[in-house]
View 1 (cartoon, rainbow, N blue to C red):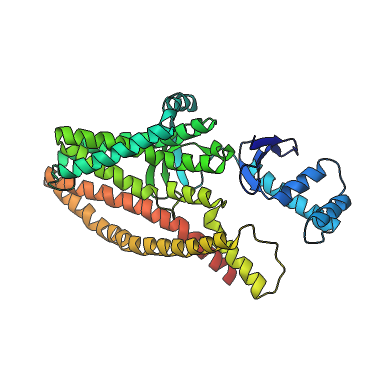
View 2 (tube, rainbow, N blue to C red; view 1 turned 120 degrees about the vertical axis):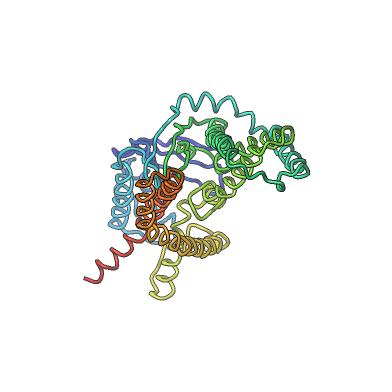
Length: 402
């Protein structure tokens, strides 16, 4: 078995699972509230030695003999206390709030999700995968010949059913993640709605995927887009048969959604795919860790522990960090004019709406109210998101200046 439970259970730990399926073993600590954290082989060795009754003197001697560095008993004790402290912190966290969500509202229970997801695990069979992707490619080529990307009917009424079809594909996306979990032998949680950063999203609780092997986790990551594209194939077929604009619009929205999901710089599916392929935990934090490591090693001449990755992975992490910084800088700069326009137009829209209300110009009033709703949404979501990013940074600068 590549995954096995380790019987080392301090008071703050529910279980420790070892994954020996890769080149290097992974040790995952699970707290009593089902939070999890990956620890290093050194940290696991500390836990193992302490909870078999060895003294810190004996532990220091054994770890020094096994490693490249001499460890004193005091260093072994401090390292153990540091590991337990980190595990205790995740154990003290309340609930199962997902990082980045402003709020989350479950709408389909875990039991129902598991029942539905189990019915579609066959989609991950290699033959089913080949047939599905081949069919989607063929349908896309045929739909292009029938005018999918041209002669777009700009009928506003068609947007409503098209958007409902798009919502169906988003549900399929979440069940793709859940079905991949079931295929791997673990039980997914609920499906619901949430706001992530400034995006209203559906979500599926697949936190149990930490129990899976590396490439099984990649399958969970990409399973949502795969299922959504399968729904897109159905829409392509219906467009070819009916030539209805709603299937045309739904396909465009669906493809756009998949492209956004593949963005590796926001914690969407593309980020988790890259994280699991590279086998780097907390990928977004590692560029800063590497820069600090090199700074301390080169300029401060401090002795640092050996890096956990080889040179190729380190180079990939640094390149990722550079691209991610450029992406976020571009996003923030591009959103600021939009936010400024929304705020500056707000008073004029209110005055205009009041005037049209006084003169009973219902058509113009509805236009004003629609613009006010859009501007309000931009201010709340974009402004709130920028505030969450900028205010903590500004507060740190202010605190240091005192």
